[in-house]
Image (cartoon, rainbow, N blue to C red; front, side, top):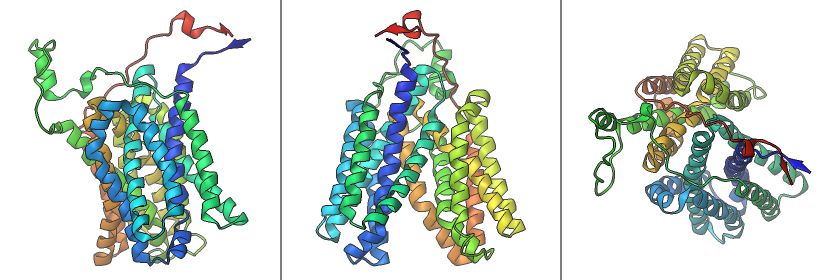
Length: 417
């Protein structure tokens, strides 16, 4: 019996399972918010507080992530946080009252923060080790996990509305995804910083012949480099664009351009479909054109496309503008995560924290602007945010993909079982 040994494919599928895991777990419990609202007799304000507790937990986890990554590695951290996320579903089912429910949501946020950093570190390691782009497809599987969870929730609701039955089935799916992930997750290895991603101090040290001398370690909390700060700003405004579009597109279609109730939900659908499609193809674009041009051109298309749609007005221009946003912004997050991971776990944790901040604060900021000036102006802020990402991308030294050496014969040929 013959078998083909493909380490990249095995690792790619394993890490993709992590991304799918996170999307599936999040959408599973969020899709049952109406049931939680009924079971616990919650007001809309308390539902908002529940979501805020999860977001606060995610933001609070990031000061610990870098330390945990250095001590245990992304593979162990991903496994432990995934197990916690599976148990969180049981916590939502068994919580006796609202205060405990808040604690469960906060724990969910902490575990999400840990898994988010760990799985993106795994994705960056995959690209470096094999010299092949993969991060955009990995993020596409996160979106696929969201969709899969929504379909499961709809299917289970046809049979039963019982929360425990739904979450038991979901937990079984999560267990299968985690088992798949464990078959090929990668061990962390120190990677050299590419010349394009070096800080000014590192480049100056090499130019002065001091490359062989390790710089003295600083005590206390390490300060981010200028490149890391630009990455963080790009991530904030990129996630503001992505999150605000998901939250406000339907309301814009309904209240501003007066779309029918049947057409109003198409805004989210158009954005989601374009993002998934773009992420499936974006790795090929990254290989051909590089991360920097992809982020710069994509965010410009998103910003200008949405701005023109707002100026023209109407349902069809709005949907075209939303499609531009989905297409253009899709590769921003994967590319920035890869660049941050090349800078180390501290940079990755900081950039992930700024991403969470953008997702949490963005929709609220757009709401404040809309309340003061109108939703059309609020959507204009979204367009401006995408253009800020394009500006930031010109200040980031994007790392070139390191090409992996050709495999040796024993690793590439067919083996006898």
